[in-house]
Image (cartoon, rainbow, N blue to C red; front, side):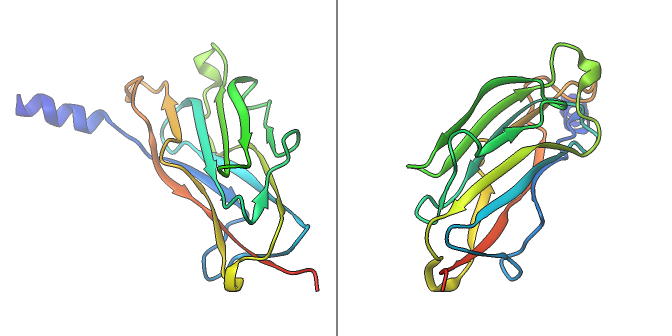
Length: 171
């Protein structure tokens, strides 16, 4: 039994990363003004996985930002021609959700770092005490791989990289 458990752990290889670009840190955020549009490329680095389906659930402070309903999240249709869900934009709770699929051909799975889409937010008000606010991937974000070393039901996301923004007044 212990050999079988070790084999199962050895096969699992969740090492996919979701990131928002440009890269920022709490100590090195983007600086924007009220009314500005803030854009991020939503990136998927599959590591050694072959990602066929990805569900992104992005969170943001809805008192600081608004995501436009029609242009707030633009899917990279070259990489993900099929949207299973969304994008669903909810400015009340500060979320963007989309579930994307490469299509029925497993050969189209994402094997190299790829742009999933572009997130656009409009700055509504300045951040509290001019500290940074975080735009992040919720824990419900998922990616599934068709690689032979992965299980079909295994979420292969290992890391997510958020973004940080300071919003200042227009003055």
